[in-house]
Image 1 (cartoon, rainbow, N blue to C red):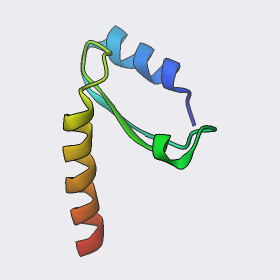
Image 2 (cartoon, rainbow, N blue to C red):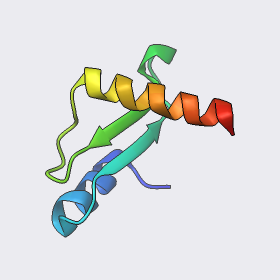
Image 3 (tube, rainbow, N blue to C red):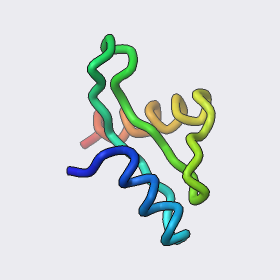
Length: 63
């Protein structure tokens, strides 16, 4: 398991991949979920993250 900062470092230094990070927060449950980092290491907007979560949930429900 790697920390969010290490994953962001790998993404930005290799410039070869985006990253989807599954998180569990010490904050309230609303903060748990996924984080999607672009190749530049920045998080995408909450709206895009929500769309990714919806697609992921549909996939998981089918399988």
